Amino acid sequence: GLLALMAQSGLHIPAQSGSELPCFQAVYADIGDEQSIEQSLSTFSGHITNIVHILKKADRRALVILDELGAGTDPQEGSALARAILSHLLERGVTTFVATHYPELKTFAHSTPGVVNASLEFDLQTLRPTYHLTIGLPGRSNALAIAQRLGLPEAVVAAARSEINPDDLRADKLLGDIHRQRKIAFKESEKAEKARTEARRLERELSARLEKIEEERQSVLEQARAEGELEVEIVKAQLETLKDELKKARQPLEAVKAIEEQVELVEEKIQEPVKSRKSKVTRRPSRGPLKVGERVRLMNLNAVGVIAALSGDEAEVQAGALKIRVRLEGIQRLDFDEQVQSPKSKVQSPESRPSILRQPFDKFRVTAQDNAFDLRPSPGLELDLRGQKAEDALSMLEDYLDRAFLAGMPFVRIIHGKGTGKLRQEVRAALKGHPHVKSFEEGGENEGGAGVTVAILVAG
Image (cartoon, rainbow, N blue to C red; front, side):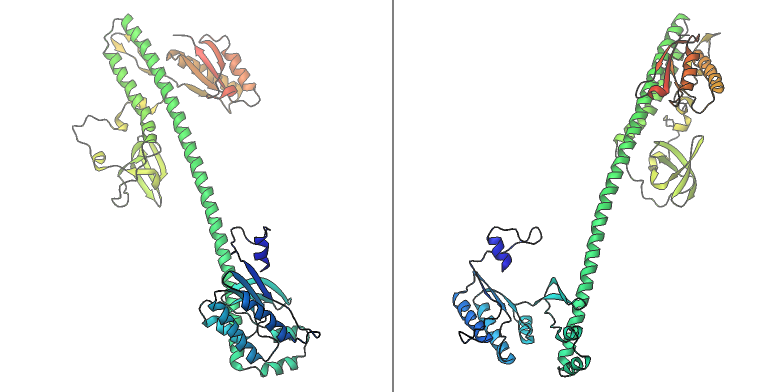
């Protein structure tokens, strides 16, 4: 009743967000003891006087609150009168709340459509109400338990208990058990809800981590593609140099065409991981478990190999000269037309292609001598000196620059790291004035910055 009046007065109510209350045109209440010596009214008479007024005014748009309906007189007559009043209010569709200790009214609510039992829990240890409302179950009076807790002699309590109908005692005990089981079920429900909330949180966290991993994977693929494109540009530049040398030597261009084919193979190899990144990942065909000797594709490397051994959820795959251990979900069974190739097929497998595909930074230098061609691989685009002593690092650098110059490379990258800067100073001091070095500069942001020095070589 108080909440209804607060809500209709525009006040905040102590309830959970989303709670709803009906709007009543009138609120009638019979609460407390209305006995009066001056007006010659007993407790019962005072209650009945109020109820008579309420029955005249109340309709389906009103709220009626009755405390201890039928109290103050003979219990049998009082409970009968209370049932009749409730039936009258129910027929008129009046929203009614009634507080009672009569078992007959509890039974009436249980068996009458449109009426429902409810109770507020009471803590017998602290003798205080918990204010937890339980819908669907009547409350227990707990009179004997409260009297015993307040100090009434045990003998008196036992005598009172013996006077109660055994059926009523059993019913009261059963009701108490139901309340306890309901309380346990409520706690378990709360635990389950907390577990569901935690599971949803973990699911969101896992999804975020998977997205981050996918972003990092895409970044690695993009970096590999960029490095591959740079390699192709270097090969093309050297190819142009070779063409010029061949023209000067008046040699046939068949060698140039062969080298162009090698460049095309390099480009195809570089484009393969880019295409595989854009295409959707397909699950390997479900033709039974994988077997030793079966040809499969390594999805992360986009390479084809043969299963050498199986162990649990991992497999050992022989890919060319490499033997790699990967998880089963990282490999894909080849389709039938990929497993068996026609003997007349001109398509080369990755293993049968020239060794340039296995050496990402190998370049070839062609010289004309006695109508023969000398193809020499370069030492690679980068030299990593991190972790080396200064003396060893300078020796490695000298040998590397000689081989890079002979290979006709336009520039090289020397990785020395940042650290204290001592190794960087030694490297740059060695580059300064070196006969093979035209100039040098610090690496760009995407090359390693201050941890890398790029040396521009003199044309051979």
